[in-house]
Structure formats: structure tokens, C-alpha cells
Image 1 (cartoon, rainbow, N blue to C red):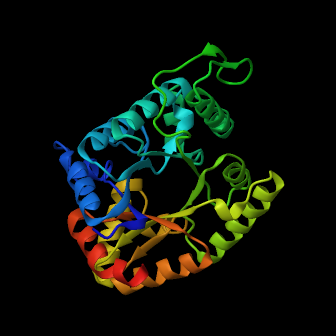
Image 2 (spheres, rainbow, N blue to C red):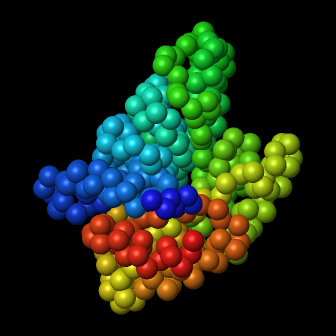
Length: 319
């Protein structure tokens, strides 16, 4: 099997609810796609995160099931809103999943957004003021790493006071990798440089990616890190139908997923809707700009078909 080392596939943990139309979601589609991706040689599979704002299958639960059903693919979150969980709970769950998977977990972590009432309400539902999300995320990441290191952890100040807390079991991976997400947000790009084992972004323009990467590089040098050692992952939403049907289907997907049309969503995250040649061109441009890894989401109800088409018609041209 020819391994595809720089591509991963996002699984439809929300999509199966979106297309269930009120009925029972096809939960099994997530295992089927993960097993197919593993058989085809993809490096990783990913799950998204939200609790109340965009209902979906709970990500940690799904990751544990994926860990038991696969043998090789890495299993990541793209991305988890870590401020919504207490770091002790999150450290315990991720370490356990890393044990189940024999060291295949990636924590993709993000601060999320606060520009919509549904995000404010989501944070309120778990007792977190949305204005605290970035600071809680940063403190939480530091505590995750400390808890996974194996020694008792004391945190006298901050949002999460701890006194000599130890966790068992630890993760298989030492350290368990944390990929930090940010677009053109200054604090976020500093966070990537200071706390990230990799950077995840979905900026919708190549030039904006370049500007973000330059800022990450500058911030990395300031904290004594070599930016060239930092992998750069691009989260890209694709639909590989012909232009007209891809835009129609992609718009329907975005409306159902975000309650906003494609025209609005595409200004905030990268969407490439159209024939394979269009996707090939976009991947090539971002790779030339410095992207080293791609996380692909299929904006379509026909996930297996889109995965097969991407594997058959896009990958040979971009590898």
C-alpha cells in the first residue's frame, strides 16, 4: 500500500445529523469512511467539535470507537474547542484514547469564535464565559502537557486550580501532539508559535496564508523555536462535482451545516467547489505557499463517492 503521508480526511460527525432529516443518523458512516481511508493509505482521519451550536456526534466518544476499529491511521480533532472542557477531564479522555489506539491521537485545538449568539450560548451552557475562551485554552494546553508528563501537577492560580493532581494512564505518545489552529488573529498566531506542535488553518486566500505564516515565523523566532520544524496543515472543504452542481450541492451543505450560505461561509474558510482540476490548482498554490499537510472535508451528502473521486482524480496530480 502506497501511504499518503500528507493528507487526512474529515469524518461527517455533523454531516450524519444534517442529512438524517430528523431520523436516526447513519453513525456507521464514520467507521466506514475511516476504514476506507485507512485502506486507501491516508495518513489520518479527523472529527470536528461543537456541543450545542452545531449539533454533532460527541468527538471523544467517536475517537475511541475509531481507535478500536482501525489499526494505522492517526485520529485527530479538527478542531476541538478545548475551553469547553476541564483540562483534567480532557487529559484523562485523550490519554485513554491514545492507549486504545496505541499512540495515534492528535489533539487539534482551537479557541473558536465569539461573534454569534449561538457560540455565546454554547459556552454559557457549560459555565464558561465566551470572553475567557482564549485564555482558558492557553492555560488548558499547558496543563494537558503537564498532566501527561506523569508528575503531580499543582496550579495555584488561573482558571483551573489544581493541587498535586496525577493522572493514570498517561498517553502512549510522549508527548501527545497538539496542533493549534488560527487564521488571521494576532493572539492566535502567537499561540501557534508558542504552544503548537503544528499549525491548522483554513484561510480562504493564498496571500492571507502567506501573511499568517510570516507572522507565525516571526513569533516562533521570538520564543526561540525553529518555524521550519512546524508542520502547516490546511483544512479545505471540497466538492468535486461539475461547477454548477458542486456550487448547488456545496451551498446546500453550508446552509445546513452553518445556517449560512456558501457566499458568506467562503469568506471565512477555504472552499473549493468544482471539478477536480480546480481542487488540484488550489492545493498546488497553497503547497507552494508553504502548506505541508491537508485535512480534506467533503461538502456533500455523498461522502464515499467524493472520497473515491478525490483519491482517483486529485491525489495523483498533487502528490
